[in-house]
Amino acid sequence: MVQAAILFILAGLAEIGGGYLVWLWLREARPYWYGVIGAIILVFYGIIPTLQKFPSFGRVYAAYGGVFIILAVLWGWGVDKKMPDTYDWIGAAICLVGVTVMLWAPRQ
Image (tube, rainbow, N blue to C red):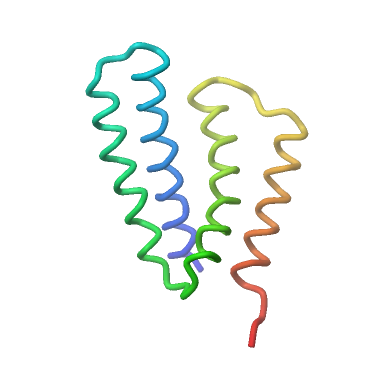
């Protein structure tokens, strides 16, 4: 469970961080190498989920989506300095519950 959480967090940071660098390059006229580094980081984002022990690609990526939402809210708060409101936190909590159900519900 801990390894799964760490991998989800690493994947999220890679996706958000890489995407953020590309965003800065294209939307805020940062140097082209922001985009290059962002693209390289996004490749790592594609690799990290393959290290998960869950057998289903769809389940891993669906659950990761919930983790991504939480990390994106935190990134916006910490990096973009946009304070999440109550509805952001409620939505993130709902996503976390969904991730927990998807990954660790008892199955046959």
